[in-house]
Length: 212
Image 1 (cartoon, rainbow, N blue to C red):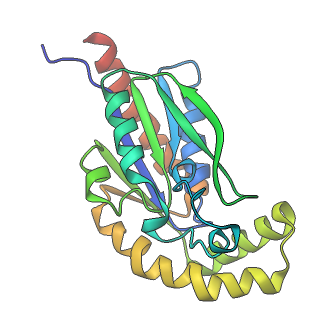
Image 2: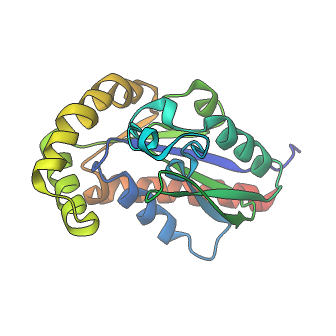
């Protein structure tokens, strides 16, 4: 009989693709079960060594913005059923907060983020790799709505950021990572068939782990 090991599911996709909705829809189906969510967004690099003006130039859509070394270390600890202290990123000061979030190990780990499939080291830790694939026009509209309503941005600033940063980074890093996915989910959280299939698969995995 093999040693019990948590299952890692990676969920990637562009900004506004609906990957967070897919992740939440799957997660909500297993409330009360042994499952946790790890968001790559929490693992932006600490930039406290840089002056504030330099931090403002951070390209949050580039792989180098993430502290994947720490993320990988944390996943490896969770795989050994050891607790971690998840970092918190403060977007107001553009660096890591002093706060941390204690995370207890679980049988299923959902790792969600725009670039979780881009780094081979992360991919090698995953048992299932998903990519949420949504048309660019839908993604920009969703991002625009979110940034204007929730972040107080102007339409012009959202469009400028999309054209100069988000779109080129998506084409250069996020879209190419789709080829590593085991399953591609079109239309994000609206794709109830794909979500139901994943829920069934995870349910089977949880049953197998419980038997061990």
